[in-house]
Length: 281
Image (cartoon, rainbow, N blue to C red):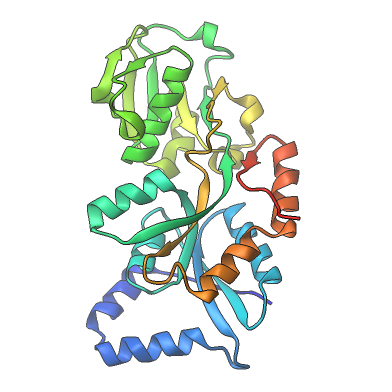
């Protein structure tokens, strides 16, 4: 039995800032134990299929634990809520994104378990193939640093640009050493990249979760990322202080259950993602 609540970070963080330590401890205790003695584990997430995975895990977690899905509306709330101990874990990001958050916020978040790797790529309302790309094309890439790097690395994989090899998974446009197509790069928030496609920008980086809103799938991409190491796999994330708890280990087991694997396998057959774990016999 799973529960779902909506999380409005601005109000929640404001109230948290005004609370006393005693109030926070009392609230944490109330959240940790359900009406029948279950231990409630709150996991922040947003958008399908991430929320679907949390719900399937909730149906398969062992007693006395119970998962409560906390839905958020952007790519900031789930990490802030976890850092501030307002939730116990989140499932909405890859490890490079989490590492950048830790660096900027002096955070203590930990990637416990990779679950699946979204099949990302570049879409175009203008071009049908790489051969069609013209000189001076505008290219929309994510504005956050880790996903900016992912987009640039994808372009490099297809010999469209050359990056400084030392830049790695945090490359920026400043690390471009060769730009033979004279691309003009536009930074756009990850959640707004689909709108950039609709606005007619020639090349737009995107994830299947977002591009699906306008009826597109990875099959419609001009070209896709080639990442065999699952570097950017969507992962279960906890904090250093709770990652080794029995509760989080129960969540990890539920998130890598046969039921979750079967769900991901169906999406994998449709070409939307690749599972990042195997089910133990």
